Length: 339
Image: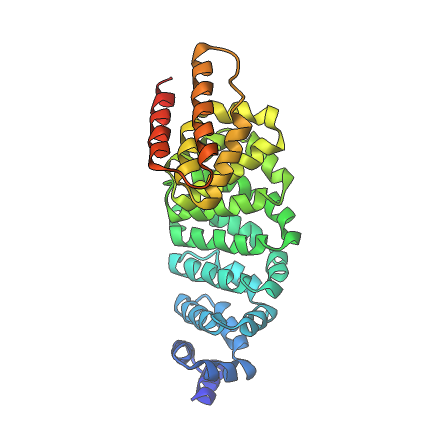
């Protein structure tokens, strides 16, 4: 059967090639391995170069089938020159093909040996364009990019960002502003926001330039504070991590900006009911912010006194927060919101 599939892909007419590509995904891992050894990747990539959407889809599905679960196949596929071809496919008018192509990029980028080659082909900028929704020249391009394609594009950039050599080109691509826009405009507990803010934390924790860019971007701190208030547990964790990095980078410069956005209630709540990592970071950030209102109006003095009171309770409890302390937190948050 493998021999017939190989022959059909190499020498068959359009319909025969498409059928052969579709059949390939049904084979066992051993059969697929044999076909890869015999050079099945090349004719599949050739199908991607056609203008036939049905043939491209069949080839993409087959290549995804070969890549899944096999680091060796991922490497072979990339070394066969697929990345520039995939970048061309991303310019097509088919939402389905765009989704499949980004999924292929995601799987291939999970292999360490592929990261530099993928990035050197211009993939970073194209992935950022997907997030911006401006791949095509027509005015409706934004609507053609599905949420799933954007999630996979972010995940691919996350894979690439784990290679330290690629942090600089990722930052220079403009992705940090793009991610902030997605976080600002998306539901704070959505999967898209979770992926975006996780990538954002990974970038700013590795790049001082990216951290300063975020800190200086109008509305960025507000978006992070809103995520702490409304996001999923993981979104809140990443948001407080970024705010902590911003505050640590220049406490005197940024702590006032963070406080002005009303971060205290969310931080206090997070310090007692967030993930283990979020709790620790929320408390660290509270310690950096707690003495910022020691002068000024009576309202500011009252807020500072409330923060000091709850911080003393949290400090006394350590890692375990009793029901009494949790109720006290809720009372303090309610009081803070009225001042």
